[in-house]
Length: 333
Image 1 (cartoon, helix red, strand yellow):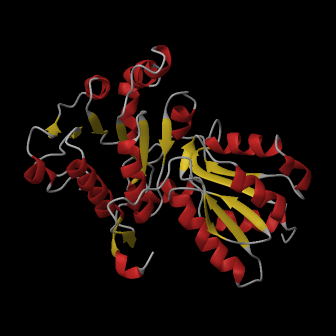
Image 2 (cartoon, one colour; image 1 turned 60 degrees about the vertical axis):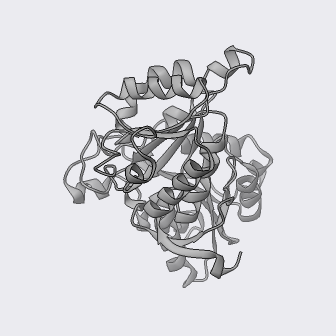
């Protein structure tokens, strides 16, 4: 794609652009959530959409996540394509019944006669000093539920392409957005048919010595570490599972066969985190015989996220954790 066919914008603006294009494309797409109308959303993603599409399609809701998710499920089964913004991912706990016991299961239980084309937008993660009830990364909960698709874009271009693909999908899609990424700037395709296919794992950086699998803000920290390590002649390959479920393991397995070393990282608590699932799948694959060292998992500490921002940073993986992990794998420390 030519640079002239792209525009530099923030992750936030890329999301808004993707949503706007899909709302113009399909009149059945509606957008609902707390403070998404006049206020423009807690993180500014919906700014201006009320003026453009009106109150019939931009729906401010009460502070009632259980009702919001239940309404989205009902709307989706009757022909609409709702985008439902949960102000903080933590609050999806209040809507889990409708999501897990209804949305995820309807298509299966009715033999494909019912579809649930809904998108649940979930601002997640730490880093803004929002403390324990507003800073969690709960993607592993969602990936455990058959019938849900779980995606998490890490760049503005991925944000636009994935939100469009999620809106067009006929299944419930949990769309996780790390809060620290909203101001991230990058080139975004202007093509209104630009999609990032759900089920994609992206090779963000080629390498030959160590494989790192990371997403969200841990991806940026892994890239910073790789830049530092390259000065020492160490070539790190970085893979980004843009779709967490169903995850495409093929590029990860191929990379581990090439490098013989693997680090898996995420901000969510290490215990029960998605990293353990990735490790298990690698161990169960042909890549196991190519491993030269034990796999390293980098995850959040098993504690609630602190309010103090220095403590907050200390409980999730940082750049130096990747650097020391690579040194350990290559027996350099």
